[in-house]
Length: 293
View (cartoon, rainbow, N blue to C red):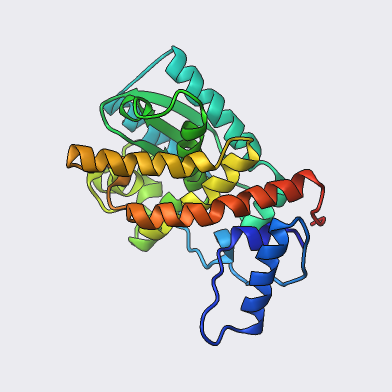
């Protein structure tokens, strides 16, 4: 089996842990030393092989992403050119290229077959400290967030990888399924007009609707692997969220990108655990220590 599965899945021992759980813990240690072990992955259909119900077909997801992105850009002015635009697109392209690495797709268990990811990266003029992802790879970063980043690209890569992860994990389609909007959103996309309720589900960070914390943690988890495989420093993901935490304390108001997400302390603690795992998986990949499909 590939080395990535035990590095991607975060497993901790518990009282009465099963033999399989203990084997997975051993696998994590072996990944970090560029070795491997033979443990069958758990069954499931979503990232990390968890069960995942989706509302949209690949064609519907693409149509909905296009329509929702057009509506988002009608609400906020996209920048047409300049260093900020080039920077966001440059980093976005590198993250997407890393997402095309087949062993990484396989071990995260990304559902990419038959899906069309029409990647598009925009910078929107707004003081919002936020970035958003819409279905099929439509991603926007607000200028308010860019002003908070270091001049190097690593922290931007943490943000972009997180948003790319949302698209790859089909989180918007999953939210629609959970809210029993299996057909409504697709029908709206086909007629070219989305209701406010549908937009709220697609862009919760801007609407005030609560984010799904499990999805946010999953996007953090996938994202730290994506940015590492794109040759960015994953430790800067930790530094970025620490910066957002300090900004909350200084402003007395939470930036939009943190709204209803996992708590700062929990998110940072998780990322600190995942960074060495992502680095270990990247070392294993670079050394050719992976198994064929």
